[in-house]
Length: 162
Image (cartoon, rainbow, N blue to C red; front, side):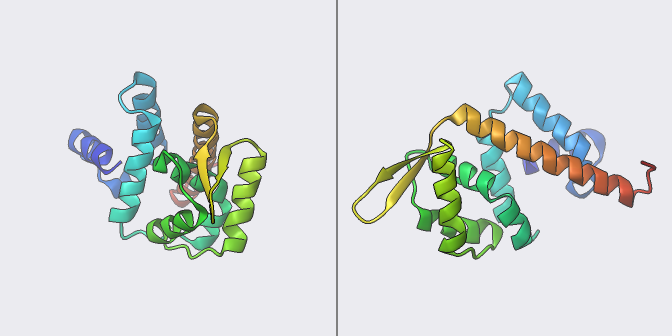
């Protein structure tokens, strides 16, 4: 996304701080629709931005979006990952120190919903995404919801009437 922001900035004189949520969503949707960037590359860029950013996530927001974050992290690991690795990823990427009692029930629910497959190992379980298209759609829906709320908040701060 930083590269996308740089492209927008170079073209329009904007900076990441003042690129509107609405505009970013149009850019992301345009790239995906035109085949310029696939969903996996967009997600990888998003994760790279998080690790390169000084922005801090509120742990409550991470918990609220935990299902979608877990789906994305499982998908990015590709051939399988385990719960401990996912908790480490959440801490490293979002500075969220979530307990096993928070993460594992969500993984079990994702398994029950058919969103992830679980392979029993000797001392652990490995998780993989069951249906990549369904996972992308779920993450995209969550993204749209978050961006819509962000756009509303941005409009309120800008003094726009509702």
